[in-house]
Image 1 (spheres, rainbow, N blue to C red):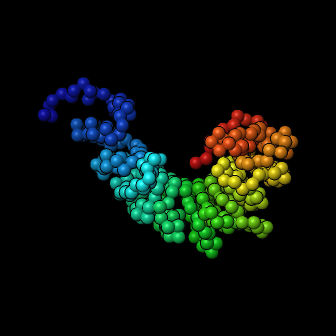
Image 2 (cartoon, one colour):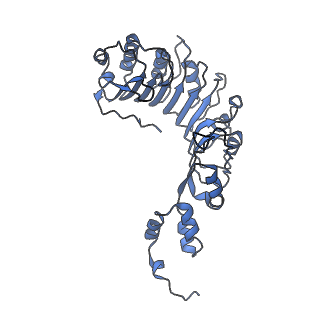
Length: 352
């Protein structure tokens, strides 16, 4: 058999084979091409790919693939809903994915995570994990399972981005730090949170440069913060319309160059935002000398306000426009500006 000349296809270069393989869905590629010869097997094994799970049926469909080829997957997205569709009136049991085969995983996104799911996210299972995103917790908030990932003594050496961190309360006495994480996304509970306490939590990540934070309500406080951060990209969503002092505290603590700021929400009503609030916001943005780009959306602005007068308050308000949400029939004021110049509005800010 060793004297049999190679077929025509075996004369093709590795580059051409890889180009051919790029047209295949990876599970089908592994099924169709492996086992032909050692060279083809090595080429297939050299490919790194991603896998998205949308339904429990996908988990069953790709069970053998994940078990045998999981080490080739570097990005895994589990987007299963607890309801299969919007008309379902019963919850779907979301079976946790066995993460042990995904030894080379770099990015993991989980829409709904359970306690069993958290228990699998360990340094042994995912030693090269770089990005981890959670959309919804299916565990008791009091157990704080995310702490085992953020502040574990054996920290993930490559984990630089964690989003979907839910904070029910902030333990200001805990000083455990994580110097590896550069980007974090935080959502606070419906109870009030002070900007000072939030900064103390953020300060536990000394090398943080990008922050995404959603806060329902800030606790009013006049105390200045002594915390200084390295954050230069900030995405801040605040439902409470009376949180301007807290926003100022966050901006003063960081050399922010790019900010996405949303005040209010389309589906929540906290009263109209009056002109004096916009004057205050203009003062805050004008005094932040490091800013080079601002994305701004403000909900429930009073119809009595003259938008032309507001545009004169700040260079960041110059491209301000009024947008009406067609589903809620509520208006929002929007602006997107770089270096204070008018720019085409782009609603997807460049955040990790």
